Length: 560
Image 1: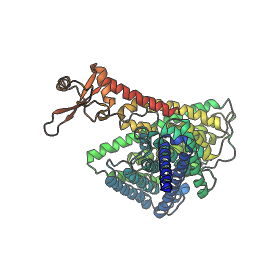
Image 2: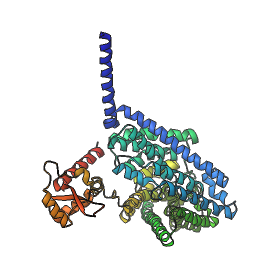
Image 3: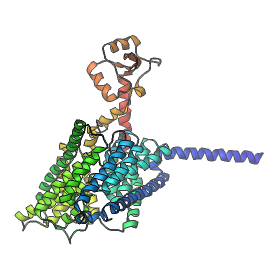
């Protein structure tokens, strides 16, 4: 009996320790060594997912085009019959449209902006069913001539994986966001062989803070993703530069400042072109009464027609980017290719075909920089370095302005090219481009995309936190102690001064400021009579307390 009692006692102590460890993992995971193992596991899984996505593109591209090499796709496409070059994007767009029609509620491909929204408003979680459909659509788009990039899809795929883990361990918001950052960092690192940029991209773009508690696990995951990439492809950079690039310091730096301004404007044109194409596509779709599934197919028609004469627009554009960085293009080619790539990206993304915008922005930036460099070095040949240096700086400047990520994009350019000697020129151009572009759009392509969906993340937590609180969680019910006077509530309802249960503090606080009342009734609309029925009341002081607690929690997370 004594032995049995001792065993029960030890088992009880073991169970309690496990429970405490589980709570510690859920609520204080980033500060615990156990969490780093989870970060490592997520990094490995996300790295393999990014690798499989890349290999999947090569497999399907081989099937439809006959070549697995994304870096020479447009050269190979020039040898194909014109009808195949046109038909492949049309078939790809048709399949994408059908997938979106049947598996997403709004026929929209999920991307990086949805991951940013999940980090800010949904405790680090993203949609899974629509996300899987979006991954399939992006895979097909990138394999059949779509003019977009693979970073958006792999980021969302990684976010789905971290969401599954967060739900499995029932992680709170802070832990869920940190897991999301780990997955995103690993996916970006594995996709581009850029461990430093992958970690900083997760912090700068997705989490949008640089909290120390998140740094270590994100770096661990990013390193894991990079190892997976290098095991598969070796320790090689995506682009190779010719010889060394040098800056004629002091005399040449003003030129890079001007280049940054030009690239910022080019980035704004690219961003607005995508949204203009999206609005135009929606207007024509409504006018002609086209079903949702035909929209990507129509985009495929336009892409195929363009690709017959200009196959450079096909795919991520690495071949043209490499040619720009090596200076093996003529000035008129550079200008035409840059303009056509902007149009092709707008058609692809605005046509709801799928893919990301990072790789296209690299190509457009490299072409913009090379054109600027050719002109600048032509005017001042004795006071300037190589035109290819301007291509390198332009590549970083446009991409940084589009993504709203000057730090991680600068490092991405260095890691993609392996050239760390021209850092000052790139940093100057990047800083100027992001400064001007962030004032002409809502900080970045992704945040502008969210703003168009009435998700106000660009203004910071003081704006978007208001949308997180609905009346049901903040109001006082009529049966609670301290509830509002029912007769006063009914009089206010008669004056049409009330809130619905689905309303948020974003709606409520301006009503308090305008009316000057201490509370607002919350009323639900009866389906049969159409009349409002009182369900509670929101007090101004309760709304402010909830808002202040959320602000304090956000500040604590960002500075921990």
